[in-house]
Length: 248
Image 1 (cartoon, one colour):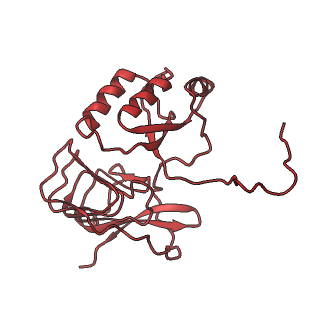
Image 2 (spheres, rainbow, N blue to C red; image 1 turned 45 degrees about the vertical axis):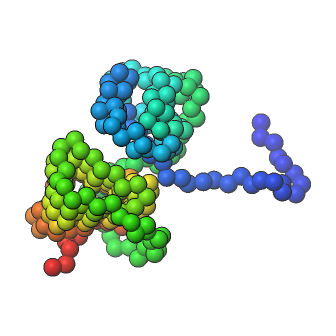
Image 3 (cartoon, rainbow, N blue to C red; image 1 turned 180 degrees about the vertical axis):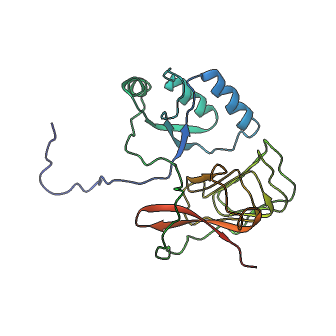
């Protein structure tokens, strides 16, 4: 039963709602051995890729009928310096598994989502971006399939091709002065004013602050393989990815 706290406000604390940028792990299988193996293949040689980042376990993509052992999943994530803080569950079994693992339910959290396919309407200019660390990470060698580069807390500059299957990630902007054919994830920690630039835009996936677009939605001919930028546009209906040609 709710209890009304009368009298003056406490001097030692306030309770307020908070909106925090979270990584989201979209589980596609309840097979813990498969998850352990693939996590090791992707991040095993980069032990400091994560920095004890808070993470939401999202179960909406679990394809098999099983319910993951969420305590074991959380322990695996901790080995990779990730902290599971909540679970997005779809059914009672998943909710029970979350409670058993001591993880709160977060069904109301807005999860990363695919950008709508319809063109975005014009919106008011966004507020000025926060100061950006000028010390960008510069990569001057081609990135092959399976390779991944992460510019933590700064921009990323790539002077060579990003080939299919390669992945470039930055907390700030991403500049590719060559063909971009792999995946590019800018604003990885929620910086919505981040942008992605390429002299030949043909990506498998682009994402800014969790909103993404894949190659399943083909770029128009005037943009595919041409100099272009990706940005996030704020509209009354939410945020949408916009891809513009770069001026000649």
